[in-house]
Amino acid sequence: MKEQAITIIKNALLAIYVSFLVFDFKIINIVVLAIFLFFLVNFKDNKTQGYLNWKANRHIYGTLIALIGFQFIHGLFFDDLSEKRFGLLGLLLASSIILLWLKNLRIILYLYVSCLFLLVLAGSYNLIDYYLTTDYFTIKSGGHVDALLVVARPYLGFMLSVGIFISLYLSRIHIQYKIYFALLAVFFFAYLVFIGNRIQIVSLSLATLLYVVFYMKANWEKKIMGLLAFSTAIYLLLTITPTLKERFVLQSLTSWENVVARLEQKEPRVLIWKCAYSFTQEESFSPWYGLGKVQTLDDQLAACYESQTIGNPMRDYFLEALFNTHNQFMEYYVLTGIVGVGLLFLLFGFVIAKVRRYFIPMALTFALFNFCMVENLFNRQLGVYLFGFVLTLILMIDQQERKKE
Image (cartoon, rainbow, N blue to C red; front, side):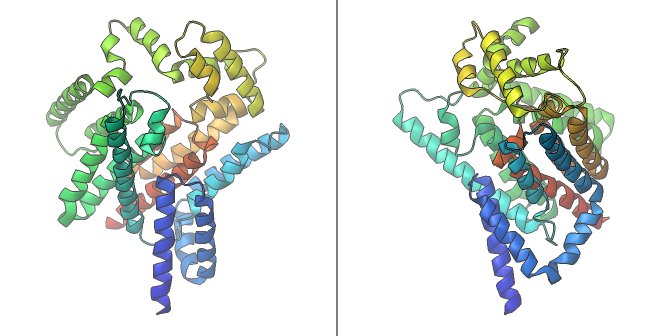
């Protein structure tokens, strides 16, 4: 009776945790605390599995702790610990280890794809309602899009990519339900295309290329044919889908210079990265410790937006939003120098070295790396939770794959 009650409580806590994560509920911290207390209460039963998972990935978790520790030391040295990002680093560590005691990851995978399916339904309902009640329907751009989708489009796109890989993994380990999970992956991809998340379309395309070249068990003739078919499908997808065509600025593609010019007026990251890179070329910049303070970086970005957006139709958007660097690697280099960004690269290096034998863990790592290239995950609560959650999935799926051999 006691074991049954413990199982019910465990599953309930996990269900709440995953649903709060997927729907970006801010009170997820309370659930994390509850799971931690549950682990302590049942420490005798959970400690062995937790220790084994930690030991198997000690270099990865050690690097993560070193990364977080360095950020705190750097912040202390520059008197910058009052910034919000340092509180989020604690959540990053918590989200990375909170599920280590689990023996079976499948319940988490089922919960994730189920909650993601519900999120897609909620977003679809909002979009249909918006279509029926507005005279001008568009989701190509605009501040209204994130509210309709429930979760911000970049983060929703990343979660959909993760959902696609998890669905493919489940279709492989559950042969009797293979068709259902395969259809679920197609469903997530269709929604990703519909909302026009170009970053994740590119990421999935590169992951497919990775699979064909390194993991597909076929001769090179079949691989080349597969790549040609895939390239044709992507071309048709980009040219037929209105939202993607607009968001990839394909309708104005006449030359490379034209594309770059259009991107500077359509994609904020192009100008953001140019500004951030320009800071590293100044004589006052030290590659060893960076700019030091978050406020210094924010002030320099604001000044750059002020001077570089004259004549740009997105000028007001830039000056109102005051974007961060939108690249976790770039932010850590500009802000904390070589050591900060080096530890982040080292973390991914250890993960890749461990999981490179298996496609799904590698694809998830690839997706997480790419997302860090276009977003500052460690500056947002949803970002740190997704990073820790996906890192856990990567390592535990890899562990399950190894057990099969």
